Every structure is written in structure tokens, then in C-alpha cells.
Image (cartoon, rainbow, N blue to C red):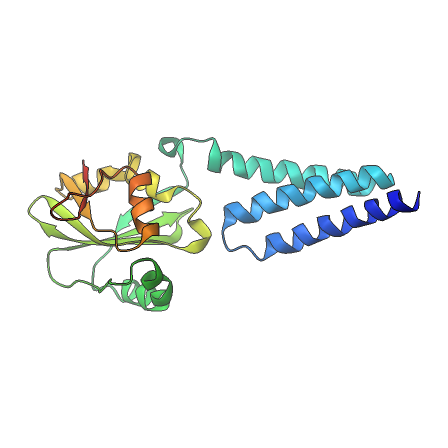
Length: 213
């Protein structure tokens, strides 16, 4: 009996720890995933101690998390109505402030990035639910866009924003007159990302990934 009581109490502490851990996550997907696991653990704890309020509360929390995670994992990028992209002036004060504020995070992913200048620069603001979620900056070579920056805020990196942009959202590039995108990966994480969102493996001579539009 004492051992069983200790195990039940320990389960409650584990559930509490998961809830606290979830609140520390910057990624919305990870937050909801950990929250889901925590609510299921709390539900089991509520069943074991016979607490109906705990059971009802955590069934509701689990259902809410499942509802939101369903959109992240089961809804196809083409069917996502919460993701968007808009062209923005390359010299926009908002754009420059955005880059400066997130500079350390950007250079951790693409350490060689420097904001390009000139009339051939294309800047795209990525949005989720109409709020800024990331940024793509590149410069034109005829009908080819060389991507200098492909950045998504930490809280949205698990939301398949890149898969949406280079899939259903690629029309924004076509409308700007491009037929091909190119990018160079300078970190292992960037290399993995480009492969995941559909770019062809890098050319042996140039080291550039390519995506034909």
C-alpha cells in the first residue's frame, strides 16, 4: 500500500513537471505536445486518486491540444489557411528592425548572412495568423533567385512554414518572375532544412541547392 501510494504521488509530480516544462517551450508545437502528455499523465493521476475535477479538466485540456496539433501534423500544407507570405520593401524600417532584433538567432542558423542591397533584392515576410513568423531575402540573377536568408521564428519552426512556402506558397516567386530558386547551406541544420522542404541536392561545382518552380 505504501509503495502504491508513493507511485501515485510520484505520478502527480511527473504530471506537474510536464506542465511546467511545456510552459518553457518557445515552439508552439512542442508546447502543445508536452502539454498533451502532461494532461494525459494528470488524467491517469486523477483516475488513480478518484478525483473527478482533475479528470474532467485534463480531458478538456487533452482535447484542446489534440485539436491544435491535428492542424500541425494532419492538415496538408496546401490546406493551411493560417500561413501566408507578403512582399515587403528591402529598405523597410520594419524589415531592418526585424533583422537586427533577431540577429543572433539568424546568424546561429546562417552565420554568413549580410543584408543585400540594391534594386534586385526580393524580401518576403512570412506570416502565421497574419502575424510575422519569418523572413526570406534573396537577390535576382535573371529569372533565378539566390536566397540569402530563410529564417523562421523559433516558435513557428515546427509549423511546416517552409514546406508551405516552397510548396503551395511558391506562387509568390512565380508572380515575381522567377523560375528557379537557389541556396547555399553553411550549417548542417540549414542543409537538412533545404532537403526537407524540397530543394534538389547541391551541385558538385557550385555547392548550390536548387528548386525549379
